Length: 90
Image (cartoon, rainbow, N blue to C red):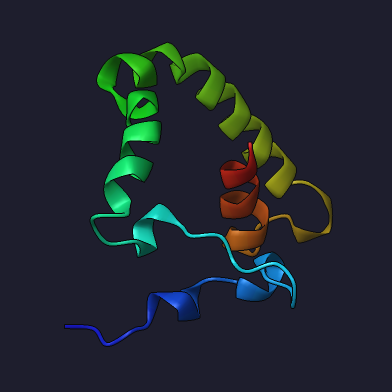
């Protein structure tokens, strides 16, 4: 068992300010609050929905990878900064 607080893995300062609390993320929420959140997004992840977006996701991913391997950092990059964060935000 790994003893890690999931909130240690989240860049909470990006989301939280003194007047705005960090949004709940589905991966950090337990039932029963998790269930309605899952219902809202589950339709986007059915096999049919994923197949329908295959080309779009491939195009977005290719663009992100192209951007990551150009410029000053050819051959290496910060994965979270160059790949994971842009993938999540598109």
